Image 1 (cartoon, rainbow, N blue to C red):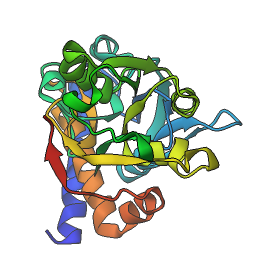
Image 2: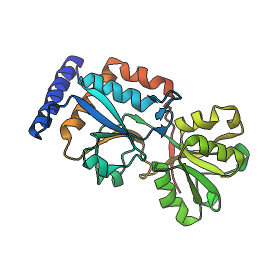
Image 3: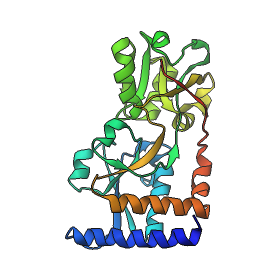
Length: 265
């Protein structure tokens, strides 16, 4: 698609977005309120000054610029606050893996970027991301994450001890201290929390990447099912960012490397 035509289409979608608000008895949309659970560095977290930072924040702000609306960030304790989304406490949820379970409640934009899920443990542990290898072992996951959902559904009933943590820093400290044996993580966040630090020198990715429907394969924005105008406008704005080169500039520092994955067993 030619960039000029794309711009025209996005302008039309932005107008439809405003018209959709008017049709619903609301004022024309001048902002998008993104819900964000700010405990997933480097995607969405707060810096020492209390400011929201991370890849999802950068992308959300850039999408709002493309649509000429104000970006408002609404703090949430957990990512999956679908009742609050339905109650219109915010317009969309930033940074969520589309899965069939979640699609029962919401619709998703196009994927913002891919992610890879890996098992991390001491290099000498010999562990692999399989039930046979992890039975009786303690595996740490982040509370409310798709990895937690996967581990509790697929591994815990078969004897793997799943422990949930609120923050990745806390999880990493527990792994280093030996309080847990391994962690199931996205490659980007565990690099920042552990592998690229001095404490992470004895740890590494073990076994192949894990592929499972419960995990998903990328990150998107969740919107209410009737909000097709908002979803279409966000998709078009994302395409504009990609066409202009701004998208690549935003994601480049985050090392979103894709690796081949193997089915989980």
